[in-house]
Image (cartoon, rainbow, N blue to C red; front, side, top):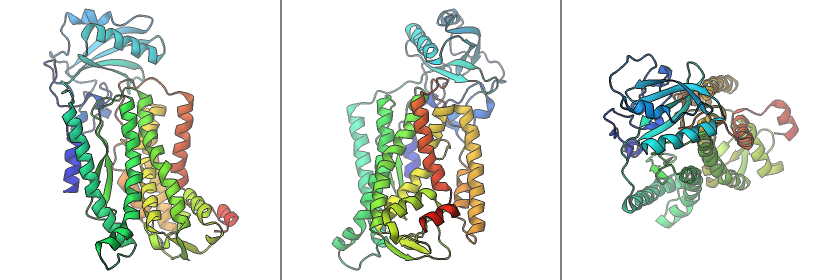
Length: 446
């Protein structure tokens, strides 16, 4: 039921394929993937169906023949020198030479097209994966239903109900992790609420960051929907669905960075506090990522440094940590946020790398990341007597498609300070995945 609910919410109020033009438009033009390239049309995602460059010509055209001359007037020779116009059932491709900076070119063409055609088209500006040259695409805009006040109220009501439903299993599993007391409901709540409130606060703030960034860029989205689970850890996390196109690569970057930094801003302080209140216990020979009552953070440089900072001289060699419930919730949330920093499609890291380097490079980085994670999983498997947790994660993420959806303006680059922030936040992923080297263990006496 939880997974069914997740799938239904994912498609709820997604724009359908009714277009103002007789030619069918994509289900969601925001997910249109570089229309001129067949490699960006994943069969597993029908919402992103695209057309290959080699597709046979068709008599169906998104614009009439007499409108072609009007369209040509939108292209100034000193902005984007138009060389040819190609027609697809779902788009008009305008190829040529870029004569100015991408921001100016996109803003100029968007203004000219809207002056002549109104809001009839989405204007996409992307790199061709076959030639590497930028091109414009005009995609018929689906008919959008205006969101009323009652619909926003319903959105808020659904978010609140799901939040309350999520608090039930998270409180129960929090009490179980605290060795569920035999007593009345008050004792159970007292034992389980610290875990539930910590987990919900961190994951909720993470997706609230994405929601706020989306609203800043005027992207239609829902409030964060918690997905309750009847098994541990009690929630799948939050769902924030963007129902309109992402305007540019700066917005793509901010969506990933904003969500990550909001989540880490509360996850790390809570983790430090929870670790400081935890107990030191003898280390176990075989410890996994989820061994909460004999937690060994040495599989990660960052978690080791945080543990040493919180526990000081109490955390030494041959010792592990028995995490309290707040530390468990913070640690789980930290792992979730860190995994989402991987440069994979629809994850925070995928948004960040896509914003920094563009769609093609982000796909290459995604494939390399999968390979590196698999190598790290094999190393951990061989060095820890058959521990398969990281190897299982590597196999799981290998199923995620590498190529992300482009923004409307997917050509314009980021500024330098966003690049620096992106490198800094991705360093957290690297420091989390790399185990503690021997020289650091000796230096910290761990």
